[in-house]
Length: 149
Image (cartoon, rainbow, N blue to C red):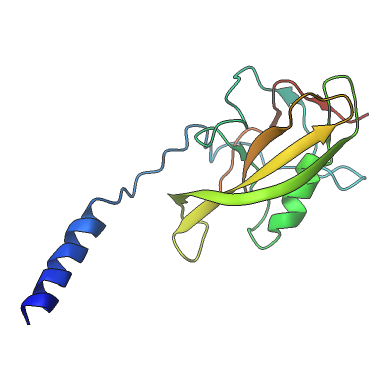
């Protein structure tokens, strides 16, 4: 009986230490809805001025579009709109899912960021971008990248 009581107290203490506050800094529910181009990529008209945008898990690229059921599709719509710094064709690979945060747009009450590695010809070191399909924000091209022509 003492073990069960101790286990229950321990679970209460551990669960009370988990934060329910999101660490994401660039969520904007008033951001305009995303629009698709004919080539099935997102229309992007702005370029990030903050070096953290997309490169830091607290400042992910927020690509919520209609619902979260099209996770890979929405990420592809964003990534296929990008090019390397001199217009190079990029290739990308999903590395991992990380960084849980609370959200109202998930049945679980939590969302996760997807981390992608981007490469292009002549690049010295691959870059990692953090993408968030659960929240809205102003969609921008991360620093060091361009829009595909």
